[in-house]
Amino acid sequence: MIKTILILGAAVIAVPLVWAAFKPDTFSVQRTASIKAAPDKLHALINDMRAFNTWNPYNRKDPAMKGEYQGPQAGPGAVYRFEGNKEVGKGSVSIVATEPSKVTMKLDMLEPFEGHNTIEFRLAPQGDATEVTWAMQGRNPYIAKLAGLFMNMDRMIGRDFEAGLANLKAQAEKAA
Image (cartoon, rainbow, N blue to C red):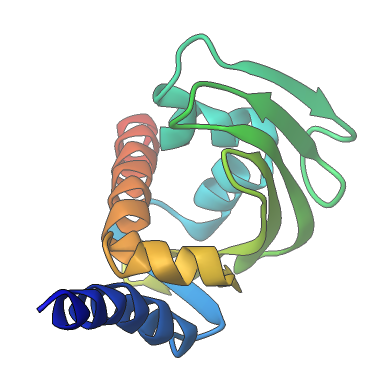
């Protein structure tokens, strides 16, 4: 009886550990919104770190967050270093490349978990609107794979992206 209980207990622990090991080594999350504004207007709200932080949902999660801008205000080399509550964490986001239809950023998280991810904002004209896609991809370390068995990371991060795109939409369309 005790032997059976021990074997079942070991299986309950081993199965998720093995299952996590077979999850993908990378992750990708993306959300898209249609915004009635010209691509160049939206590009300016994304490509400028100060403008970006007026609608960035992560800045709204911690009103007491500490932040510091470095480098140019916009375009490649623009950096925002932040330190906030446990929901926001500590790290930096920097613009690494920009073109009229895309802004690429690098997110370097230090806390609560270290991570180095690529963020892309793609802008595609659609009649009198612009389709804006916010995407993030990066490595999926084992601990994240294990956490992913119990939490839906796409849904968690995706909700933030949806909120951010809604903020961007409200700001861009209000000013239009």
